[in-house]
Length: 32
Figure 1 (tube, rainbow, N blue to C red):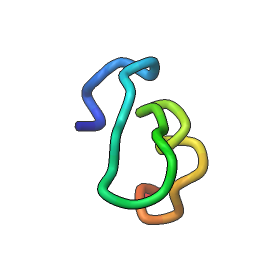
Figure 2 (spheres, rainbow, N blue to C red):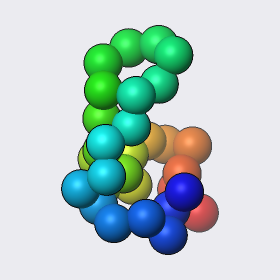
Figure 3 (cartoon, helix red, strand yellow):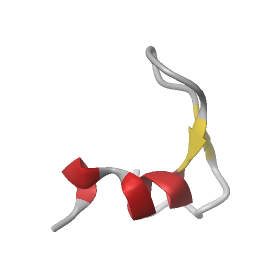
Figure 4 (spheres, helix red, strand yellow):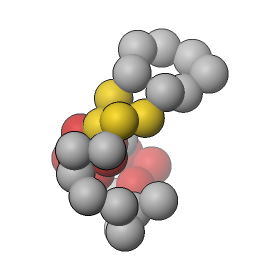
């Protein structure tokens, strides 16, 4: 998923929609 462009929308089964870019910046589980 992280190879997708930042503007790709994500519709998770919980919470509001997001984008790949937002998840890259703010999701602590994606910090390597």
